[in-house]
Length: 203
Image 1 (cartoon, rainbow, N blue to C red):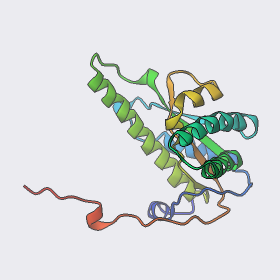
Image 2 (image 1 turned 45 degrees about the horizontal axis):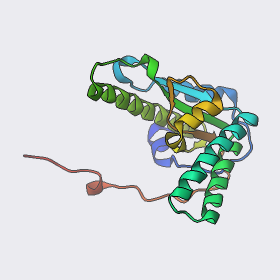
Image 3 (image 1 turned 30 degrees about the horizontal axis):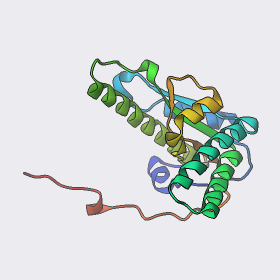
């Protein structure tokens, strides 16, 4: 791989526009292999990564998600022109990415508790572990000369995503992660450093 871990961490960026150059199958496999190295609660490895093919599956997903998102934005009082622009941009990002993953929490492999507090903690641990798995993928992508992004839209319409892709009811969608070769350099927001990151408790 071309970059050190340090280089990958500090050069990773959220890319929204990709070239139409295909991602080699072996690189996609490397992303999944890296995801599987993430820590997980009780070693359950509760992640499932759905690979969404180009064409019909993505259009079906976009149609379903767009309808719900438009309704949500409308109920928020957003301007119709702004809604149309935001939805169109998201559709383009999803449909044109050479490689698209949908990470899901698989509830069937989690430990089960009789009280809701511990059960919620179990679910949160699974979500945290998926975040680690996704970060592994994003850094591995950089090492292979790829760029990616992190789209949280499925959290706002999980049932819709499940139905559009005919997923198992136990698979809870968490994000959409597009990968490809960057077509347009994004504007990077400054990262918090120093005192903005920490709060020391000495007593």
